[in-house]
Image (cartoon, rainbow, N blue to C red):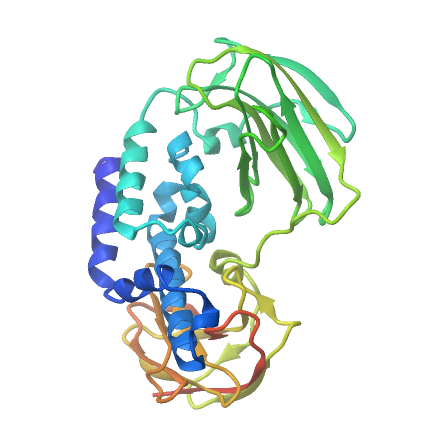
Length: 360
């Protein structure tokens, strides 16, 4: 099956599965919160959260292929970011069918002879250092991306929490700057933040490691001179918005068992998700065909419950099926393995006590 067809099929299946989106889309067109009473404001928050979860599911199902669709069309719409984080396109107020169509279209654009970002990650490139200025030139002899643009790749060995500003300037080119984490989910890009047609990124590296920096251009086939400089940032640089589901899957969390009830609390010291909510993650070792009911109850929180399969396509969530603001999921596991359960909440930055129970 071609990459384009694979994306289309996965998007079609996902669209068929999700029926709550009209509510979420309507929420993006609603007036300001000041015009709502508390109950309507809560419903709007829940609808927006459903929209977030669609992005999360879209990202999960398309993650194996969307990572490699790196055309400027994807970059401009932040859909590559969605593929790794699963939330950003909600903030762009994009209709979900349009997002799926653009993913499919970008796959077609990305089937040229150029290199994908994943290919460039595996190359051997010069290593930049703090304070260094590169005087370079994009030419037809340079690496060619799959969107038809030329690029000069570099690596930077970052410390965890290190903040830098990277600037690309050119009088010949419309600069495009990319910083990519080959071993994680961070993918940032910029066009004109350096002023005029110059690109600039100020960022904080989430972990120690080797990051890929691309001195690139917006226009396919464009050539010309540029300078690239990387400096320490003395202020408070933007940090990654929060922890995405893929990263949480890789953590070490308490193991739940059937018949167990957890008395927990969501606090500011807990895991901060990329939708602005706090969460307590747990694992559950399931047998193939096993059916359980997971219930999250709270008088402090509007509960949100997630069950995710780190090694498969299953991703189920619930808001109020437990009655009132309580969440409940009854699920039959498709295969044996370790599943992730998130005790979460609808409202960003909400804290409070809860109970989480697992029963057969």
